[in-house]
Image (cartoon, rainbow, N blue to C red; front, side, top):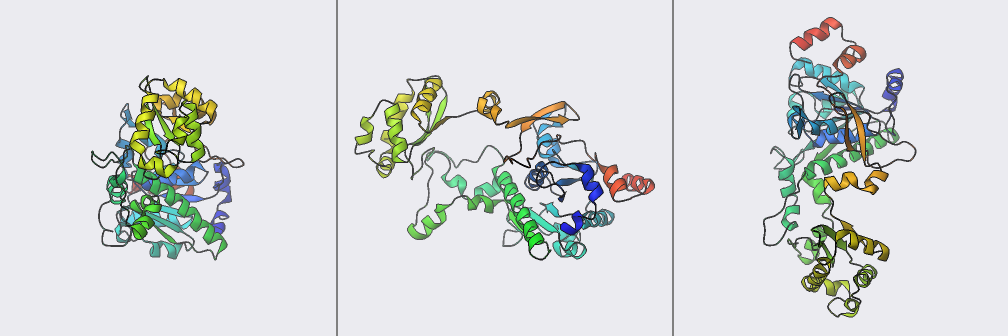
Length: 413
């Protein structure tokens, strides 16, 4: 907050953090993915993020595969750009130290099961008494209220509950879940966005913070767009159609002669006509089955068969060269090996090298999105457990060396 940002200018100037969030102080009290990833996004853009982990154990993500020499590479990404301390939030002394940390924070992020922070005396009402400008972001499976609030909520459960798998996959196969923690990742983005909405409101409308309730399933549910109103007004229940869409044809991935795949989306009449001409099949344009998008959707199987047959006779590179020349909207399906070699990824610097204490340097995704004037950056990968304990507890909170050693010996820090 503005008043607090001015309270410790020397410390914050010493940080010399790049990005538009320089001067913003965040306490990352989350675990695993959703809460910590929201904090990572803020750290990427220059916020001073202090990550709290359980003494002697650390965040569970530290033990997730892939592992190299027993160290989690996942942690290197989600723990990047953060200062790391250990603190037992379940102990009274740890809770008191947490309140001291919260006094100078702009944002606290937590993703424990609802009621846990209240049980520890760290709920929003308690924290707001000592820091009225604090923004508390709470991420949970089903939210802080409602009949399912107390349920455990992992990303997979939220993805299923959002309804998305019910229309994702092929009609003759089971509902398909994403091959990455989509619910956590999307919720973290909404959480980071909401936190900054609240900071703006605080700084421009009276100086008070607020509590933000982010569930894992609701951000996904928000993304289904027209399905709610479609069911409300027309009773439409979207079904699994593989890679096709009921509203868009042709829309699919097609196998090439060299066993690659290319995605096509040509719902507008102009893009479809460019596709037909590029395939040297202009007769498709006047074919009554494909004369407009509605007709193409009704006859999508026949159209897909014709397109698939054309693709099977040509290589991916041949097709992409032809389509680029004809301005056809298409793109190859890339795996991570392809991405590392792709010139556009390279030109956009989507993969960057980060300093790492264990392996010297590692490569990971860059900061998204790109700011022209105040860009974010990856300053370092996730570091060792408690790497900043002494700096924070002794250097910033003013604990004596004796008190620091005592708390460490008893497992409080």
